[in-house]
Image (cartoon, rainbow over all chains, first blue to last red; front, side, top):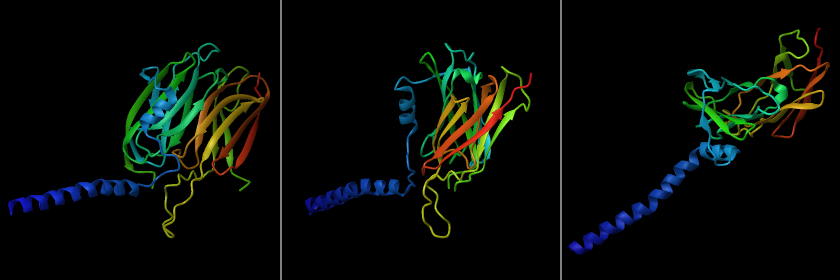
Length: 156
Length: 111
């Protein structure tokens, strides 16, 4: 009798183990899918080519600490740079780490800009970090990030 | 949909040759992410967002932007530009459904 009970229990455990991954998949499928979802790590690798970015005080990122409306969050990125033909800011990337598609905008600048600054307004779905990645003409990458508390999400 | 409202602003209003001015470009665009549902029909609203913007000054490219859906409705793009003689400043933008528009402005430095 004891042996029979043991096999019954074993069978029950096996069925649960078989069902549970299916359940978790079903949960994931419920999440709304955007047209081009991208995680933060994949985006970082795509931008820097796997090199990674260094945190720097040269990059100033201005975002409100508390955003009441996640649909309109003003972002300003300014970089200290002489903007000459030999030393200039190539690109500014703005990323929202927890949005379905982390990449918000890539801005490709030229020395004709005179000043390395870019401002726009982005949507944030949840409380998260906003990150700016700056590509310099000498091939290095700088970064700065700040946490933004969102009261009402802007993606629904 | 041929007439989409847009605006180019240059600050300050009057500028000299060689001055660095602030340029902003605004466009009235819904910026649909493709994740939102219509509240009455419960159907997903298809994605429609600006995906590229180009700033040109006397047909020389100043700034190009690649844009994704996480920008706000009616997006604003602000940057700086060096004034370099009289000419034309133009912005070309396209969206994910294939709409392409252009807006331009005369540049006339004083003094």
